Structure formats: C-alpha cells, structure tokens
Image (cartoon, rainbow, N blue to C red):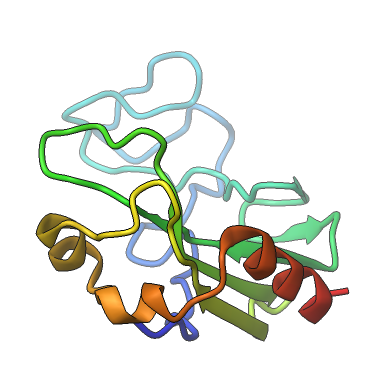
Length: 155
C-alpha cells in the first residue's frame, strides 16, 4: 500500500451548531442542561464542545497552539493470522509521515517494508488484510536495517 497525504481533517465544529452566545445555562428554548453546561439527551439543540488537540494547549473553542513544530505519524503493519495470536508479532511495513503541527501539511514521508525473521511466510489472511505481498517483504531489509534507514532519513 502506498502511504501518502490524507485529506485534511474537517474542523472540529463542522456540521455542529455554533455555541450559544448567552450566559452558561441559557440555551435555546426547550434545551435542558445537566448542570455542567452539557445538553441532556433528547434536548432540541447540541452545543459544540471545545476542540481537543493532543499535545496542544487549547486557547479557545476553535484554536489550539501546538507545543511542537511537528508530529511523526506511524502506522505499522505486522504479521498476523485469522483467529490466532502470532507471537512474536513482527513489523512488516514501517511508514512515517511527518506533519507540520501548525498547518497540518505533510512535510516528509518515509516507508519501507520489513522482512520478518520469526515468521518469514505471510499468511493468506495477513496478505488479504494488509495488501502486503510476500515478495515485497522477502526483498525488504530486516527490522534493524529498516530502523537505521528511518533514523538516517529523519536525522
């Protein structure tokens, strides 16, 4: 599978009604609150919750100031089988996408397949689930070399 940029995430409030501009507890007619400013189930309107951003300091319902310049997003694929726990599970795809924390833009990408050593033959289930072919991992570096390549690329 190719690793590439994902479509931009929708803003946290997209599709939700705006927050009430009145005092806390002064919701729309017919809206009941539970005392903590949350609309009860069955209420006629729902208020947008403040946006939650990992590793960021919230400065308002729609804005967050990141504490980091960027994030490394990893999405490993590993050896697997249907209904059986593979021990040890081994990484067979090692992708990294670097993302700018302020803009959300993809800054850089790295990907390599990884040759499993404990379970060198992929199961039919694993190939179907991940889309990773046996020949790809047969030609791939072992974990230690793949990790060294990733470190060299992103140092």
